[in-house]
Image 1 (cartoon, rainbow, N blue to C red):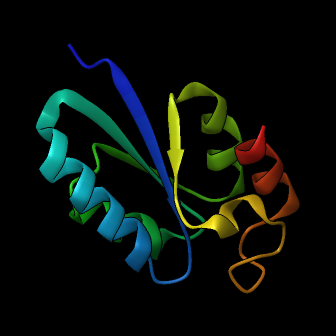
Image 2: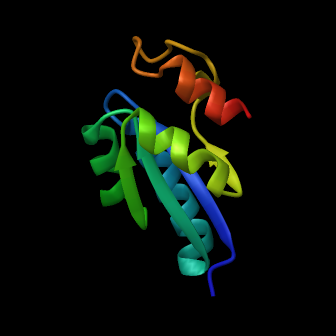
Length: 98
């Protein structure tokens, strides 16, 4: 049974999200569920290749899934509107911060 659900949020090239997913997966194995949420499809794809269980891209995916997970991980920019060269919208930042 999977108990903990972790969302990893990243944008642009997905490098930070990929590194976070790899570290979480190597530390906890399959005991947790990792949801890759990318501001774009490339970031999501990199996190899925790194070992995330599921992935989704875009504003609505982040806004809809943020309240459904136990932990949200990513760079500090995920709580700042218009960060990541504008990829992270104000609605995304609000959903993560709440």
